[in-house]
Amino acid sequence: MATGAVDIEMLEAGGPGELTTSTRTVEASPSRRGLVLGGVAILVLAGLLAFTRGDGDPAVAAAPEPFTPTTLGPEPTTTTMPFEPPPPDTPTDTEETAVDEPGALDSVDVSQVPDALRTASIILPGDPALAIDLGTGAVTELGGRELDRVEEVIESTERGVVVRDENGSGKLVDWGLRSSIGLGWNIWPGSSVVTEDAIWVLDADGDRNLVRIDEQGRRTDVLELPSWISLVGGADGAAYVSAFASGSVVRVTDDGDLRRVAEGIGVMGGEEWLLLLGCDDQLTCAIELVDLRTGRRLETDLDPDSGFELVRRSTDGRRALVREWVDGSLVLLDADDLSAQRIDPINGEHLATDADVRFVFGPASAAADIQIVELATGALGRLTLPRAPTSIIVTPDGWVPDERIVEAASSTR
Image (cartoon, rainbow, N blue to C red):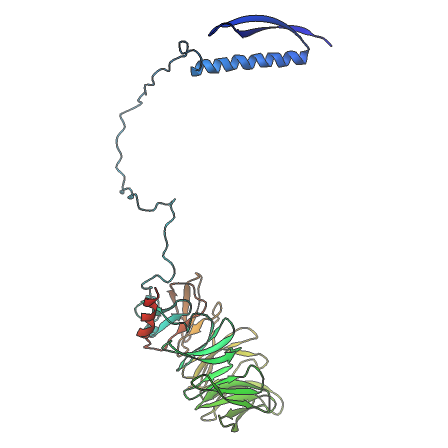
């Protein structure tokens, strides 16, 4: 392998503060010569850098020339901003702006609430429960524990509201929101009837048992009927049940007296009216609306092969909104004029109706917004609530919160 000689000038230490130079000749292979030459280049570069930074002898370090700015064009002028800069404590776009917690509002905008609802209120169950006055927009925090664990609002009645908690237990909460009557577990729409004189529920332990509950929540009467039944309505302290084996609707009193009131399979009912499936001798069937006071019948265009579920019943029991299972359409039943009116589709799950079932409250695009649909005209209203609702209660006209539950809320803050 070819070799070559490289002369290297080296710095050596002499006496104190003294450096001397010497030259050495090194035989190296081409690869070693490359390494040596590279090392020399690095030493030279390091020396240059030290010189330009003044890291070496202060006597030879170059002092920086003072910088004199050059002005181009006219002297700069001060520009007046069209707005005052924000004070130091004002959040900017890059700072996190504090947002009030839901429920902290003193009022909400009710400008889009229909005039016919201005004497009612909305109650949001939860912890805490909130009341919103639809006339003024005032938001009131409610004390007490009757509505803190509500999973679903089943029905509003003249005596109060039937709700189910997260464990499936039902209760009737009075409109004062200070007391309740337990209805047992496994409560769903149509499984209970609350009238002025009585409370009836289907016994969750048996499809033939009908239970009457007194004012203290005690099961005073448990009637075991001779047929599988469904509870379809009630009036004057009595219950109306559909007995499937006999194909008839039976009126049941608390003393166990049974009286047939209509032929057909009861679908649902209210105060002295029924929606039932009736068939003639040729087994041609139709869904009929029957006024039990007069015996009048209206044959509807509802599909007899469909099932139906109760959405809401008016507090006086004379009107009801039902959903048809086949296509999910809504039908408004009115016992006073014996009519069955199909309703234009309303998006989403229905949260509530007013006490007279003339308006439906349903979800809107934003989480805390609800739309209000007038069933007679289809006109829309809108309301933004203090927090996103899981369920809502629309009170009867003229309802105001009991002062004691308002004071109870204030004392726990």
